[in-house]
Length: 254
Image 1 (tube, rainbow, N blue to C red):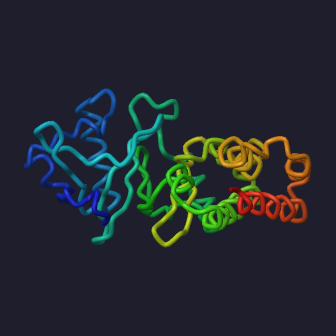
Image 2: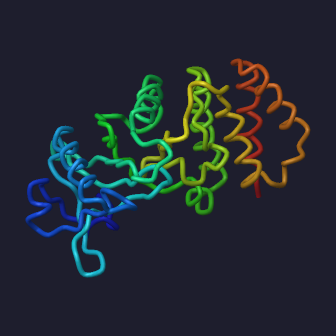
């Protein structure tokens, strides 16, 4: 585990109450005790060996990896391995994790996204992806390194297009792509994904690149033409041409 998480310790589920851990985050934002109890039961049924806790404002609380509009993400243990545990918010527009788990499982069929281990009504247990966000990566790395990562993300986005799964948030990829220390990107968070609408993962991610690192090329006629062609066809030829152009333009950045 990284240096930033060294202050975390894992407690077995049956010790969370014994150690007076504040578990209200399991029912965020309402803090309802009945919901907390329900989450604890589901964690046990899912085989969680423990939950990561840390001191917060003078008391122990589950360590929060991330907070989104539909779920709270914590660190857990399954068979001595770290996992990410996403718990549905009590005020989420979608009250259960069933649909998100279904979409993540679909992404996993083409080796995209964190590996789904298990899920229940309110919880998803998945691979813990540690690394830096794409936003952090593109501000610190060379243009060649950025081009290599972008190529991999485009390939993953194209795979999602091919299985007709629209991620839904790649137009703002800053926090939805994590790059591991070994240089492998992972598209995370399938809370807004859909198999009903037309997939636009490659075009959404390319639009993000144009707004961020390719701003000076936003009116490039070749890039815009290829983007339009892929949007219409989504075939292998138009994808290959678009990917080659995008990665070449990034590698030429000053």
